[in-house]
Length: 414
Image 1 (cartoon, one colour):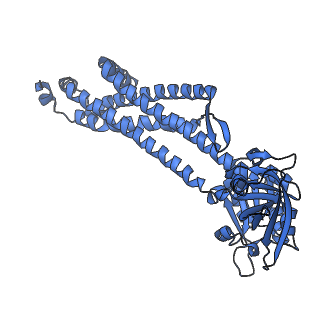
Image 2: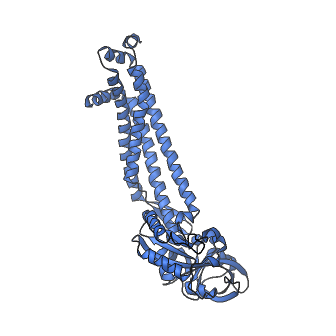
Image 3: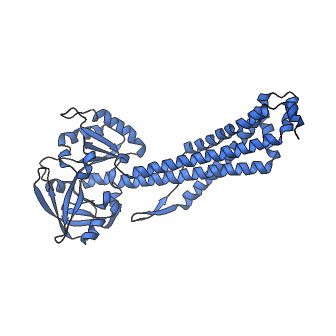
């Protein structure tokens, strides 16, 4: 086998310009694919982190039927204290859970005593919420404080603040209906203004959990949802599986599941963008396969055509068809191997340069977010192996054609 590889390498060196151009084309394809994977995967990870760390968390638990009606913020589908206790016990048994936060979500009328508009409110425990959504405090345009949101205070989304002409320190009033239909109002002071990414449509505000329950006149400590932060995104499937095994099997009075457990991608439209990035990566890989397939096949077909008399000579000397096939397949293998190795080295070098230089971009009001491309060794190995395998496959047809030549006809070729 080593002898065949040595002969194949010598044959490639006989046509250095062609070998160089083919290797260069394969190298460019490998570099393009690996750089795209490095940048796109890093961008996707950063955006997922921005969304999960600002408002969603990694997992959310609701009472059955809540998510399908979430646009209406149904108060009658809140979880009673007993259900919250069940969730708390289940979360305490999962090592992957870093923190969790109960929330009460409601719709209300927001008034500056002159004009009125609607607002979506999240009643949160400031300490717990800061652990689940550590980047929420970074969304402040103005205001804020040591505590995420104090009692009697409200965090107002930028869209409403501009439309209602309110600023930090202004008094406002919130009016809401509880689940029985009765109306209640409370006075608040604006503690801070949040940029629009804080919620769907930019209309999500935050108040203290106790204030939300007072506004809704809740007798029990009901919860609309429980947001969960894990030790990493790669723990989502494990934690979700454990939750389904503990609280997912619990039934309500109608014999149906009592809880819904959703990962972040089921609750955010950004998951569609993440899927598009994955789809684009797949198409880029297909392009790489096409480049290698066409390049190597073209070179090998030309090699067979130019070396017909040579093939006839070695066949007449007793070289078996299998050895001839192996020779041309080895040439294709070496082309793929050389292009893959050079491409991987260049790609890793460029990724290191980009990480050192940094790629900055803006996201909402956050300026100068630093994107540091990185690529997993598994992606590098997959790209290299894929190139080599495709190069071998591209050599099969020319190799088969060369091995099937009649020695006499081949020696007559001019």
